Length: 197
Image (cartoon, rainbow, N blue to C red):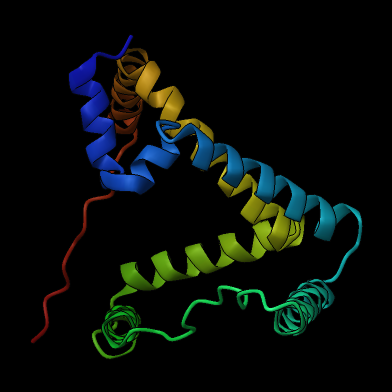
């Protein structure tokens, strides 16, 4: 079974901090809330047929009505007003989000440039394969179900790997050796370069 060194390795691989604690169930309350809320949302939208737009609209309508009635009753009964936080996005957060989006857009443009200008066929095949895989998976299951499956896997796979890391690493090592042996037996074509005069 995994020891504390492998446990800290998995924790560091997941980025450390609160996200790793959540995914490894060290923050049991947060992980349970994420699991239950994602299950409820999946059931509401996928199985019960509830629409996302109507759900958000109804929740906001209920919230505004409660806050309005609370504020009116507070003024009539000489009670304190409802504690509404300052609804403002900090400038630093907006700048960091814009920088992260800028990095993502620049990466996408770099890949597009690599395909079109540099005419990199390997990058083209990688992009085509990823887009085809996304399209194929999209035809098989609904996007919301896919998000729900990703949440369930992200809450279960790190814990299983942390607990059985030695066994999983041994099996993956032996599998990679078998794949390498099989790939060595496949004859590789010898490239003959044409001479240009």
